[in-house]
Image (cartoon, rainbow, N blue to C red):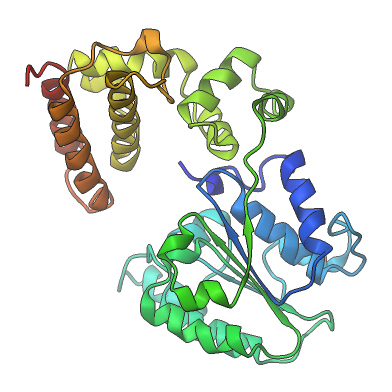
Length: 339
């Protein structure tokens, strides 16, 4: 799960509000927000551009009431350009270009899973136009690592010599994948990882019971946006706790309604915890009592490599049912391996 699943659906977390105030107090034409997924990069990036374009901003962000704030809310602001893979643009309600929307509607192609160079060229042209509302322009790129080299190079010159009144936010969950030349032209901000007590209090403020919040935070590796998305997914803490033993039995139904990428993510978490337990470390995603007996280290290592390979093709149009059966069978065989 990614943070986009819940972005905009909940009140801004206090640690994001603090980072927003800190960044707004600094100057710079381009920010790179970086850190693991689930820490709020997209939400923080959107908060920055809202404040930059707001008619009555404060040190704590946008006013939330002016026509600029409303235009962003309804995805029609003339001075904001949002660059994302088309699948995420559509999921979050951001409009595609007329040509891109027409191509997808006519089934000439599927929505892209990376940021297309055509969209970047449109963004460069946008940055050179005069501001429509007179408060400058903003470009939000998320997740920035979804730019390929051609797309990134199309942005490079504009980042290096930006037109007078345009500012950029690049939000990334894998900043190491960005071109060094892109990173060097941005001011870097590493996302704050909030304390457990802060995350617990925030989860409970979103209507999640304390025990459930603890379980979902563990299942997400302590990433609050991912934990909230998991809590809103309809899955129960009890089902997550029962998953390792169900996989050990080869029970496909335990993952029956999950997408292939979600299945692989869950199995990678189980593999991680068994690897940790086998070397005396503390599991991260499951309680110790929920884990089956660890198989030999060699079997776990082979399984880890196989899951990494499977993750690269999780979004390909395979038969999802057959893929699920194969993944669960592979997991069961590993958990019962003797060598």
